[in-house]
Length: 186
Image 1: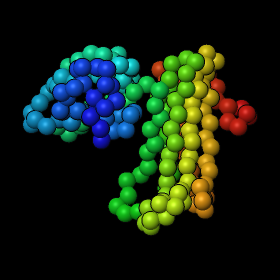
Image 2: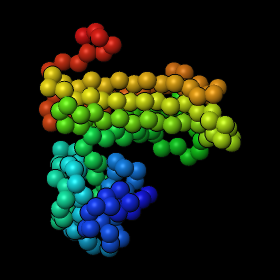
Image 3: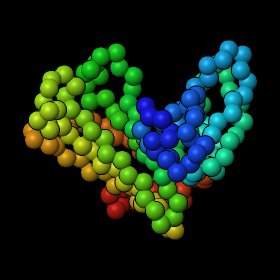
């Protein structure tokens, strides 16, 4: 969790925001803390921000918005050009062996790319101090012809990526693609 002013130091609107925060650089969270609230004023810094709970809605940044809210669902926005990893909820480390990981891709504008590196260690020992981990690098390049998503997994100092783990990709687009090519095959 980070204050918005740490990421957007040139934007004076972020200096006194106490009711919203960044989760990483990709997610902006504006929790509802007032029972019975139906709307909330939320500041979105520069860029395009997508309602994570309803990805078909997007907002231009550098403005305040009045956003419909309820106590049950916190407003969360993802910055265009981001990749968000997700896994099933687990009660303890290792509960679900080889649990699938989904990468939710919110493509950048044409000619740009979105990248994310998923860091994983064993979650139980101090081997992370010896850089024993695996990293999954995901990149989505946006072009006029479409989007190219690549995934590269590597191990660092003896930690092998999970064997047999399913990886899913969900690309948030305004309309369905005409075709999908996997590993250069239709």
